[in-house]
Image: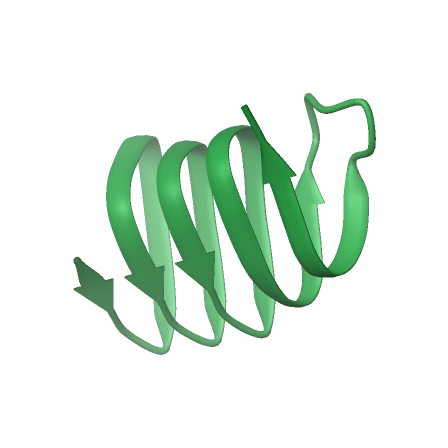
Length: 67
């Protein structure tokens, strides 16, 4: 669990991230924020802007998911 205005993880983050801006190299779990960004995702992103660079659909607003 990580709750902050700005969450930044330079490796693998697991679990729940809640913040205005969430970034991670790889995230496994749920990101909730205004802007969610990661290169690899196993889970969900909920926010205004959701970006997963290594995904078939790299940008999706409101809800994004990869498994």
